Image 1 (cartoon, rainbow, N blue to C red):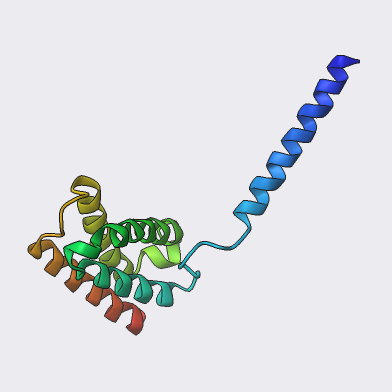
Image 2: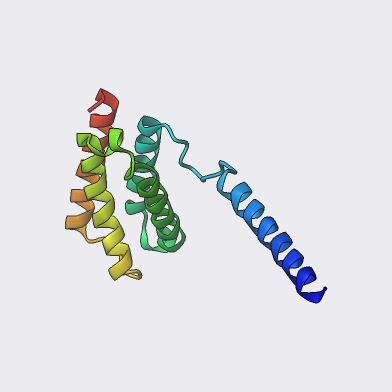
Length: 134
């Protein structure tokens, strides 16, 4: 009898965990990423341009949010074949990888001027490309 009761408890716990994971995964609240590639690319580029232009006083929280935004954007669009072949996506990916690499390797340092200029140029190029449909 005790073995049957334990199996029932294990099954109930497994069902509850499965439902909670399912509901969490299907909640649809993925933060600032909406699922519209054009809007998300422009919004992400604008947000990152604003972040790298900040002074050193306001940088810490903005960099944390930027890293989260970069991860969310890449997780959303990298697996999509219809998007990841576009020139705007490859340009955006280059800029995001450069910025994410800097934040990962030098978390307490400001973005160097050369990297800031290159990333700004790539983000603006990606914005232009996505608005044209490329």
